Amino acid sequence: MIGLVQRVSEASVTVDNKIISEIGHGLLVLLGVEKHDNSEQIEKLTRKISQYRLFSDDEGKMNLNVQQVNGAILVVSQFTLVADTQKGNRPGFSKGASPVQGKLIYEQFITALKEKGLPVQTGQFGADMKVALVNDGPVTFQFHV
Image (cartoon, helix red, strand yellow):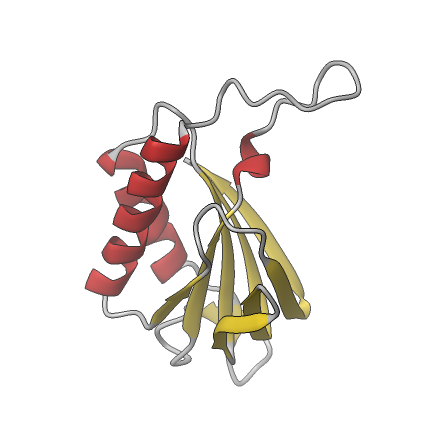
């Protein structure tokens, strides 16, 4: 499971020219699900995202996590994160989960974040989405669990 996490001042997802979700201050999480992912990876990544100190304290140091700053999380599925780009000129997706498994893990991931008390908005699994964001910093981290 790969989570590309960006600290944002705002982010939104549009499908068919309609905004379906949006957040202000918080984190945009682009989630790539691999075929071997299960509840262990979900727990590791949700713990990392909820506790990772990405936000500045009063002294300008990244000492605060998303909960401490009352931030929200926008989770968007992005299977291209698991692409193999090592050879040739076309990505390979053999490491990626099937659409059925990917959707199940994606939904379980969202539920796990909500169970940690985080306000969560989502994209639409499998849809052609337009993701807009203002990356705050810019701050971007990749977690591979």
